[in-house]
Length: 127
Image 1 (tube, rainbow, N blue to C red):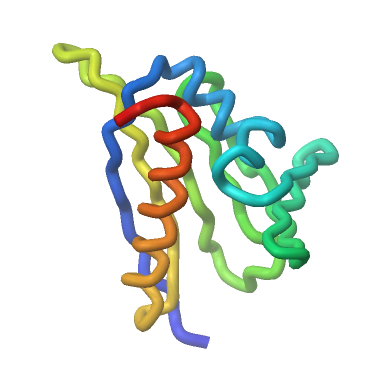
Image 2 (cartoon, rainbow, N blue to C red):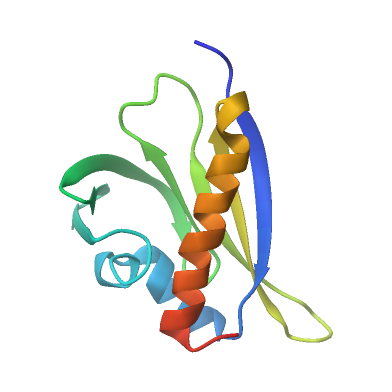
């Protein structure tokens, strides 16, 4: 298996960090923009898209700052992280996404995140 490529994306989100965090860290929040449905049992989250289900483990989280998940079927150390950064001066809120993809799938993965975050902005009423 080829090593996956790490990539990062940044999106400015017009939202409070507290509200944004709810959409990143809770099953009800994630199911509004990230997947069709999300369930959790402790640290295990089930993400459901079009009838297929993927399991991810919540590795780490810090309230109003970030969540970090790893897909259960991964044989490597890859993960995906959603981090909230607030600019000290402007107070602009940004969402930093860190993820991994096979080399030939990076562009597709980035486009998927852009579409997902576009849905998130819509749900938040952000531009």
